[in-house]
Image (tube, rainbow, N blue to C red):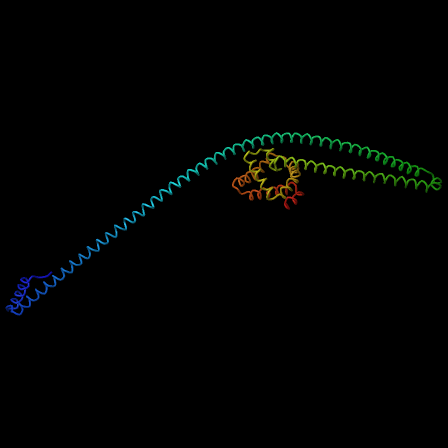
Length: 364
């Protein structure tokens, strides 16, 4: 802090007394000059400080004016943006309103279309059910007629064969009797008769033996031919029956194992719907295997019927192992996985009950 002249002089005198002397005039003049210089420096500093204050005030005023101008410009820009934003919001609101109206109209139209489609589907379903029932009744009547005709045809052919066989048997027995009689006469003839008629009698015996052997061989051939013919006709009949069953099954939309399971232990509406969806997928993606399965299915079902004593227990197992997991996969959207599981279990069942049809199913 700057000292006054008096304070500086008094301080100089105090120091001189402490030194045991008096303050000289030269020292007093130096204090006077130093105080004057200090006062002049302070005046200059005060002037510089005042100038700085004036400069700062001018700069502050200019900055305030610039800030005010920028603020006014910014507020103007904000106003324009707010107006533009308001216009955009109004336009967007208008567009949203139009879109909502369009969506509402589309929803209403879709609802009407859906209702109409549902009515058409119900009508088609009812018509299909009536047609299917009539077709099944007609098929059952035709099947019964075919079975009756086949049975009658087999009965007539069997009766005719039995008559032929009985006639051949009688001829064979007569030939044997003739042979035995000739042998007995030859044994009972005298030595002279044997010497005179021996060769002739032996020739007759030989001819009778040959005739009897031919009749026996002929009966064996007839039996073989009849057995082969009967077996062939049985196979042809079964093939025709299988083809008819396959056509009926295809028309009704069923599959062999699922249909048999439904008839034995029952299936739910949801399960049948899921299996129908899987059948459509398989028809589109694996048509050859589905075709082979539908053709060989009747033989598989008949083989199961012959070898399984408790059908309820067997088809309950099929439902638990095949239908339930396959339906779960179909509902989850994994149609290819559902097909693979259905195919695997079907092939396993076929390998156990109908191995002859296995090759067709594994190749498909």
